[in-house]
Length: 183
Image (cartoon, rainbow, N blue to C red; front, side):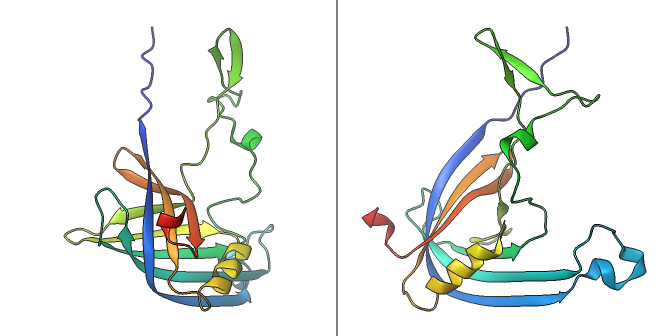
């Protein structure tokens, strides 16, 4: 009998951060994939638009990170490692032959899904109490964040984190005007 592959347990946590500073950049260009014949891809978009925010802050209301620093890069793009139009049906797992996987639960066949672990990563810089991370979002999220950043102070960031083995994934990110105590 084949040995079942053990799925690592996930730990979820919610961490609150008080923002201390930020910087932003916006880029519009001809996509690098169409500028040079070595990079040609026939389905590549001709124009490329990206935006990013660098957010810095201090952890508050965290089990083990109070007063530690965080530097988070928020990338806004239409292309990238995430397809923002992905549906759950697109995540159904398949075997080596391309057949969809199912499992039995209470006598019923249930689809097996391979959902992304997060929208970004988070890690602690070695030898310091500084965390760094990045997330991928669509342009509208960056636009919404830029609306709040220069007009409201202080701002708070909530990170929904998932830890799988030694890797930390960001599964949710919220920029908010109210203090976490007020939630």
